[in-house]
Length: 433
Image (cartoon, rainbow, N blue to C red; front, side, top):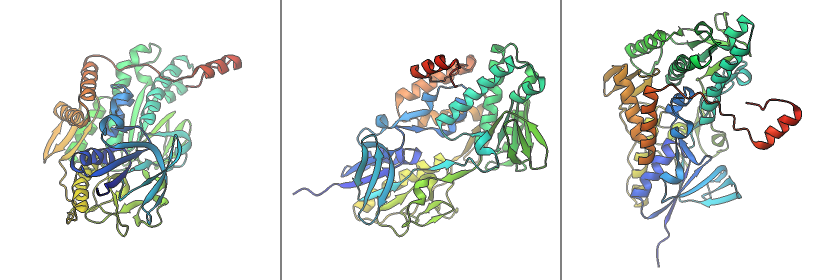
């Protein structure tokens, strides 16, 4: 009589969940692996700024999960409930409610962007967390330029051409650089828009940019942005966002029609439904070996988990650490299933990198500090290596090479469906962008 195979269910298809699935496919021949994800693809979030700047197409920063986890079962759906006592969970799928049983459950569903950190932010600002957000911001930039060409009020033209980014961390710096470079490269396609009518401002409530990196690299990033006419305001926070302005903590007002917020996250709503699981500041409390404290057969990795990294304190919610946690958990799950002793998670960061626009970047790798073109090339080489399939690596490489020599694409994607066009024709209106 054959023994029942171990059932491992992984919730979340980001860096952590997808990496863990691929690792277990190689290591856990005795187990049935199921990956549950809201989306059918994994998003390379550090590359979203490149979508905003139109240096790559949106499909180039995602990897289809079915293509990368072929030997596992993939379920596209949203987990609606988990019965930890009976070890089963329910998913809302295209078929309806689907029940899955498990022996080991891994929670790796990440977090969400916070949209209400500043008064007026939810109504009048945009955030960058998903491919949809990146496409929306890209379209906003193109739409603002088109609006300026048609506008006759000089003050409103300046307002439409002013792009304000709130937050001087990795995302904020990368988006500011991407938009500045994009505006410079594509403005000649809009001959009625003057160079003095477009502007990018970056707000940082800290005393320097990129506080996660050494001060010298933060200063290098600031110099690089300023050379490309980005106004960098440090020690400057935002207190209120409206449709045509942003109020600073000092009381000063900036006229802008486009505010992009790259600060703040909130826990995934699924975390709040787990009464049996201990959380701290919205993150699932994990033991040293990545198991969830007090719940048998449950583990957590990635942004949704509060993980202690050896003696270094809490592990940061970054893609690099999510991948490291996934690889470590794959080993621990194999050990646990064979009745061995699991090991505590400990990982030393290889470094951090950020792009600061076209051909510019900053990085600290194994203690070595780099800036400019070498850091930019290293950033691209690293994320190219992380693409899970050879075909996707080739597509990205070709697209990046093309972007070195040619301007960004200025196609304004609206994805208007035929019935919407017919409705607009009948109403005498232009389809919504």
